[in-house]
Every structure is written in C-alpha cells, then in structure tokens.
Image 1 (cartoon, rainbow, N blue to C red):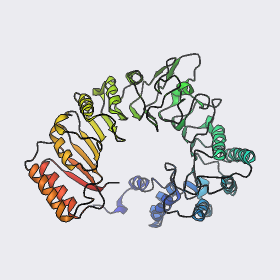
Image 2 (cartoon, rainbow, N blue to C red; image 1 turned 135 degrees about the horizontal axis):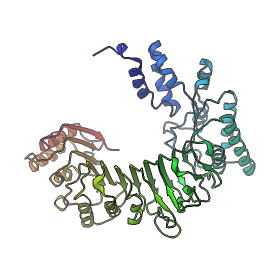
Image 3 (cartoon, helix red, strand yellow; image 1 turned 180 degrees about the vertical axis):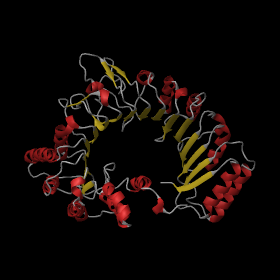
Image 4 (cartoon, rainbow, N blue to C red; image 1 turned 30 degrees about the horizontal axis):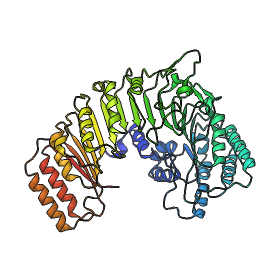
Length: 511
C-alpha cells in the first residue's frame, strides 16, 4: 500500500471532503474538523477552504434537529453557547473574506428579541459579507424556553421584522436559505416571515421549517430545491414556478394545503413539474384532508404532471387510486411508501415492475387484523419484478403465523417487535428471494441470564437443526442493551447455521 504522502492532491481532497462533510452543520462538528489542519502544511492547504468556508454563530444543534443536546442542563449554559462562534478565528486569519456559508444556531431562554439583537450586532462587527451564499438559521427548543416573553409585543414584533430586513441587506447575495423556528413564538415567526419575504425572489434552494407565512404575493422563478415543512394554503404560500424545481419535499402543517402555489401560469390549468426528479410528500398526522374532504393531493381543477419524476416518497399521506394516477405516467425508478398497508395496495397502479426499488413501511403500528394483514401483504408482494423490494413492518401487536404469509417478491425484510427471533426464522422459507434480513427485538435478552439464554437458544437450535434453502447473505440483529454477554454469540451461531449462504452478520443495540 502506498504511503499517504504519495496520494495526489485530488485524491486527498476527495478524502478530506468526506472527513469535513459535516463541519458546516454546527460548531461542534466544525471543531472536530480542525485537527486535520494541524497535521502538515500540505494537508492544511488542501483542507483550509473546506473548513474555513463556514462562519458559525451559536453552539446549538444542527438545523435538522429542533432540540438542544441533553448535556445542556442550565439556562446559563445555553446563554454561553449562544455566544460561541468561530468568527474571531476566521477574522484573525483573514479567511472570513472567503466564507460562503453562515450558520446561526440559537436557543432562546427568556426574551428572544435579545438574541436577534445579538445576531445583528455580531454581523455588524464585519462589513464584508458579500461572499455569503448560504444562510442557515435555527432557533431550537429546550425545557427552558417553552414559555418565552416579550415586554412590548407589537414593538418587539416590529423590531424583529426590522432586524430581518437589516440582515437581508447585509447578506445581500444569499441564494440558499434554511430556517427553523419554534412553532409558537410570534416574534420569531415574524422574523422568519420577514426574512423569507426579503430573500424569496432570489433563492435557488430553501428549507422552510417554520409555520411563518411568506405570503402568496411573493414569487420565485429560480427555486430548484425546496423543503416546506409547514406548507399551508394558497393564501400564505408563495408562488413558485414549477418548471425549475428539481427536488421538493412537502410536509403540510394544516389541512389546507393546495397545489395552487405552483399554478404559475394562470392562463392554463396545467401544472407541469418539468425537471422535478425527487418528490417527497409527508404528513405528521395520517389522514390530513383538504376542506372538501378529498385526499390532500387532489386538485380537480388542475392538471398536474411529473414527466421527469424518478424518486417518489409518500410518508403517512392519505392516498387513493386517483392520487396515484398523478404519478402513473412518471418514469419512476424508486418508490418509498410509509402508511397503512391497505393504502399500499394502491401502489399497484404505478406499474411497479418498472421500478428498481420499492420500499413499503408500516413502522408506526398496524391497526388491521392479523388475517387482513396476511391477505393484503400477500396480495402486494406476489408478482413485483423490480430488483429491490423492501418491507419494513412493526408486528408488535400482531400474532402472525408464518405459514399464512408468502412474499416471493421480497428481497429485503425489516421486522420490529419485542421478541422476534423465532418468527424471523419461521418466515425465511416463506420469502424465497430474500437476501437481507433486519431483526429489531428491543426486549430480546433483557431479562435473560447466561443460563436462561443458553436454554433458550438450545431450544431454537433443536427447532432449526436443518439448514434452510434461503439465499439470505446479510443479517442485522438488534437486541436489548441489557442482554447477557453470550447472547450475541448464541444468536450468531443460530443464524449462521440456519442460513448457509450468510456472508455478513451484524449485531447492535435496539434503541
């Protein structure tokens, strides 16, 4: 093997991009990347632009998380974290002029207007922000700020709006905006709303994780990627040109979501997402409906089409055959569905044989009878011919008899329950094309002793004494954290013996 010094600069940069990939997310991740700069001059020259391209104000969580880490115990700790920053280091080295991304993660503790003033002053310490293209803002939640205060409600709201306008003027070249606010704070929502309105027309990418309303009077013809976690109705949603979008994720917050926000050409009833290749439609609560009690995606007066759509995710969204028809003509290669199994049957209208991957998940529990579960799952997984078919199912409240199911199309099976090893092996002959098996048994081994574990697995070895004809090559087993030391070895021996083609087996703790 060649010494690392013999690697070319291009190869090393590829490695360093992976090592520093999360450095822009929060201050803790950024600090973890700093040791790479101290190895040698060559490494520093190759990585410094990757690490120093991000300015971070505040030491809150990554924007994907709305909660502060559990190691923060007091409000004074949080106040200190809010003021942590790497600005001083970037200013002293001069690299702040080359920064392209600004990350602000703050945790309000009492009066949120003080945080906004702090942010404004922090940005005012440096006047050359024209290079910033990406702005990520997050106001996360802790046990200390469920009740925030405002001494002068209307005045503070107006002041928050003015601070947002001032920030937009200072950071005038932002084309990517990601913002998260707490749901119930009027002042922070006003700040987000104003900031969104200031920037919306120039944005290429937006992550909108706040109930703040940008407003239907705002228009964008540049957006290529958007995440709207609290998508509302057409009165509060901005108007977005659908032709430019390449990736979109919608998570409705109310029951009034409408496709009207993409009805850019009012002279036509057609909404064509010409270049959209990735679409995820999600709901926090199953069965959200529009006012006329039709499923959330249906717009009878509009002709909606997705001629380039390749990847479709439907997460807890109420679907019907009419909804599925929206995507029937799309050149789909991947479909991910999470919801009730009876709704998954509607997916058959998509011509599933053309897919390269289908994943069906019922992780949040099954409300149907055991008999109906077997009937519907058998109907779904009988004749699909795509390369990868994944079924993830939580069967904790079900008493399934393995002989009642037959899933010949499945290639990947993920099972979750309390005690499941026995059923997992019973199902192996009923899934002849299975190559991957994941078993999460979060109570398995919890109350076992070394002796009882030995006795338990001895019974299983006798039951499964003859190797199966299974094609399974990969197994992941996830058991209770308090299991005996011998539990993993006993489980491994059992699965290795019963699955003759097994190549890899991994054991983990169920969370």
